[in-house]
Length: 193
Image 1 (cartoon, helix red, strand yellow):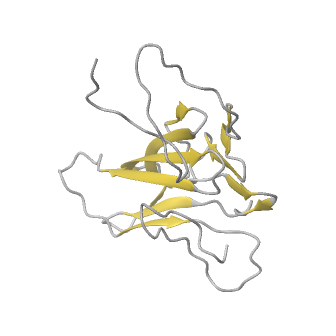
Image 2 (spheres, rainbow, N blue to C red; image 1 turned 120 degrees about the vertical axis):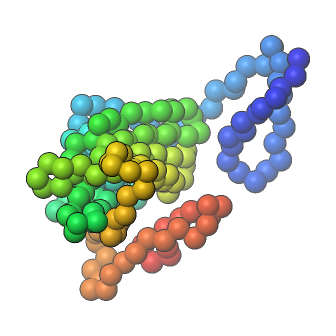
Image 3 (tube, rainbow, N blue to C red; image 1 turned 180 degrees about the vertical axis):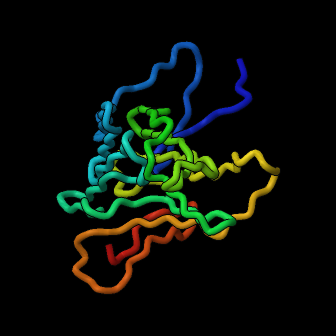
């Protein structure tokens, strides 16, 4: 036989080999990945990292824990905030349309959340789809945010701003803290977290 496409998903820097054929079977191995999908949300544990995505309101992360340290405060939710062309404020804090586990295997978990940004008066502007990629034994989450123009009035819609607010807890510092993605090849929390 032949293969046109092959997806390889592995961790580490040591040499790997690929076996294929009808007699090859996937080997089982222990994994620290755990997924709990409930009516309230989806909780993922990678080993060092634990996070929850709520099904009741979409604030990106409902909670994030690194070891025994909670990184997100309980009183200030994270969220996407959008300012429309007329100055109206919208947020992602309404209940999402869906939060689903797209992939759950020993190496990686993918959670997809989708919905719309809501104004206080009930108006909606722009859809979102966010995928959370969590990896076995890793202390980070890779996020893919898709922002969709569903206003229907025209092909293009102008907005004033789109902001992700992600308050962090426990620093004791009075200065603002920011998370930055350096490159797709090296996503990680800054050294000061």
